Image 1 (tube, rainbow, N blue to C red):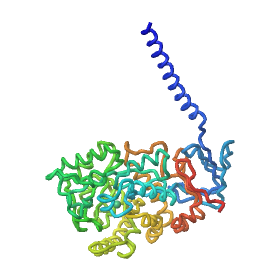
Image 2: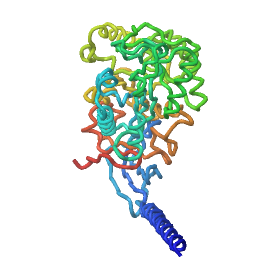
Image 3: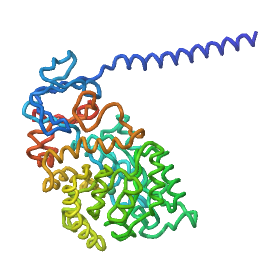
Image 4: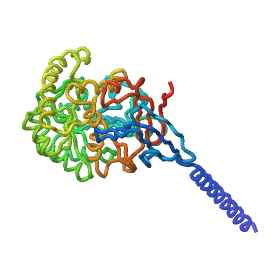
Length: 459
Ligand SMILES: [Zn+2]
C-alpha cells in the first residue's frame, strides 16, 4: 500500500513537471508567434548604395525585420509599416571601421595590470554605444578581449556596432604586443609565470613556429574572426623601435596557415618595408598602417589584392596633439613623414583601401573617429572615402570567410537582402564629406539590424 502511494506521488510529480515544461514551451511559442517583424518604409530618399557614385533619387527603401526587403520608386506601405519621409536627405549604408580597439579605453598598462574588475567592460560598453551613435554599425576589432562585449551587443542587451573580433594580439617577445614595460613578467617559456596580458586576453607572446601555431589555435578557439599579428616596431610600443621587423617568414607563414585552416585570414601591424614584404609573401590579407611600404611592396599588394588598412587622422596631428611623450615623439614624426609618401603611393598605384581609425586610449580620443573622413579628403573624393567606409570595408570583412559572424545579409551596402544598417544624412556627403565629421548634428537617423537607435529628423 505504502509502495503504491509512493508511486502515485512520483507520477503526480512527473505530471506537474511535464505541465511546467509544457507551459514554458507554450509561453516561448506564443511570444514567438506574437512577435511580428518591424517594418519601416523610408520614402523619397536620395540613396548612396555603398558602391556606385551615381545616387538613386526619390527612392523608397523598405525594411522588414533586420533586412532590406525592397528598394524602388513608389513602394506601397505595408499596413503595419512605420513610414519615414526622408526627402532632401541622403540614405547611406551604416558606416564601418576596419581598425578599432573597442576594449582599449585607457592606458594599456593600467587596463592590463591594475584596473579593477568591471572597469574594462563598463568603458567598452560606453565606447560601443558612442560608436553606434556616431553612425558606425560594424567594426573590425584589431586586438583586445572583445568577445564578451560582442555577445552582449549581438544579444541586444546593450547598444553597439557589430564586431568582428581578433582577440589577443600574436606578438613575439619584445614585440609590439609585449606591453610589460616594468619587465615584471619574464618569458613564461622559461619561468612558467602567468602574464596578465595573456590571462586577460590582450596578447599571446609566442616565439617560434610551434608557439605561434598554438597561439593561433587558442585565439581561433576563443572565437576570433581573423588573426592579428604584430609584425613590426611601433610608435607607442614598450620595447620595440619603429624600424624593427618582427617574426620570421616561417613564423608568419605558420600563422597564416592556421587562419586558413579555419577558413579565415591573418592581418598584420606592419611599418617597416621588410615586415610588409614578409607579410605579403606569407599570405596575409590586409596590412595595418603600412606606412613605409616601398613602391614595390605597394605594387605587390595590388597584385595580390591585399587591403591597405591605414589611418589618416592619426598621422595628421602634431606629436603633442596625438598625445605623444618622450621617446614616442621622434617615432611619431618619422611615421608622419612616411605617411604622406605612403598615401601618395597607395593612391597612385591604386591599392584597395579600407577605412580604419585605430583611435585608442580613452573615450575622448575615440570621439574623434568621424574626423577620419575629413583627414582623407586631401587624398580622396567624398565618394571614394564613403566607399572605403562602407562596401570596401565589407569586402575586407568578407575575408573572414566561414568565421564571418554576420552571414544573413550583405554589409556595407543598401540593396535588397542586405542587413538593414542605415544612416540618414542631412545633406549630401558625397559632395561634402565634412558632414560626416559632425555625427551628432548631421546624422539624423541611425538604424542597425532594422532597429532605429536615433531619429532626430524633426528636430
Ligand atoms: Zn591598432
